[in-house]
Amino acid sequence: MSDSTVTEPDGREEVAAPRAVTGENRPGRPGRARRPRPRRPRLWFEILLVAVSYWTYSLVRNAVPEQRTAALRNADWIWRFEHAIGVGVEQWVNHAANSVSWLIIGMNYYYATLHFIITLGVLVWLYRWHPGRYAATRLVLFATTGVALLGYYLFPLAPPRLMGGGRFVDTVMVHHTWGSMASGDLKHMSNQYAAMPSMHIGWSLWCGLTVCALASVPWARVLGLLYPVVTLVVIVATANHFWLDAVGGVVCVAFGFAAARVCYGSLPYALPRLVPRPAGRAWGSASSV
Image 1 (cartoon, one colour):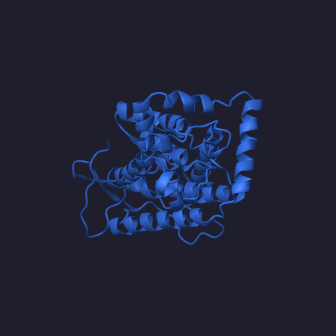
Image 2: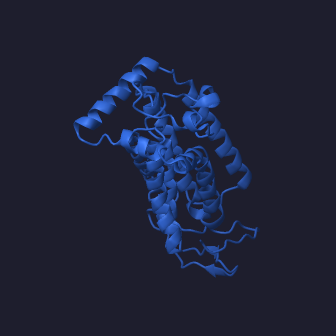
Image 3: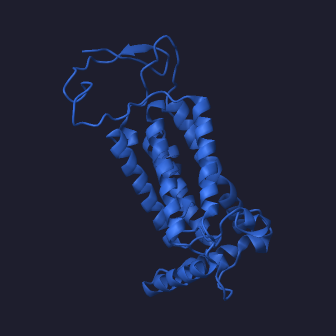
């Protein structure tokens, strides 16, 4: 049996209950894969990893051939399919939001900025307050983003604002706001036909579920649940996505959680919040928000 020491929120150390060494955790047991144990993340490594990972994702995403003909054909197919089942509401939402200038301008900036700001903010929050759950939850995000690249390759899709016939309003162009990397002067910096699945939904759902599951105050949990819902309204209102793109984002998140479950043997949120203190080093962790 062995004891492990953890640091409590107020800086006190407590000795965890002794755990018997069983066949399940005995080193070297044949026929059973050894899963990674939660450990304290290293700040310099995490900054480098996130930066390199996002750079690689952007590079691969933008390297996907911009198949304009196929992308427009797929957009027409989705548009017809949604109307056939009676859920083609994107045009109505787009025109209704565009009729209120302050609302749509706010949505344009929401689309352009919060996607990155909130995702990074949740990563920092996890690193600081939930170090034992950080790596597994980060894996969910990375797996979600990685599998999305398959969608961009296999199903090029034009966003509604690029469809012909004047059905949709490109709200960034009309209101001259910096609201999308795929509109205006920035359109050449991003693959305009990488719309399925929507990573605005994938990332916002990851943020929302993480905050809802781990935050200790009710208002934060409520905000966590509202964030992906508001994001869905924004991506549709700005004509950057069909709502079916959001379904694709949800599927990617489900894949991410499955990958973390296989790797860690548990959902990330069920892992210990704290991790054992490294020998010879003192570090503390405050209580969660």
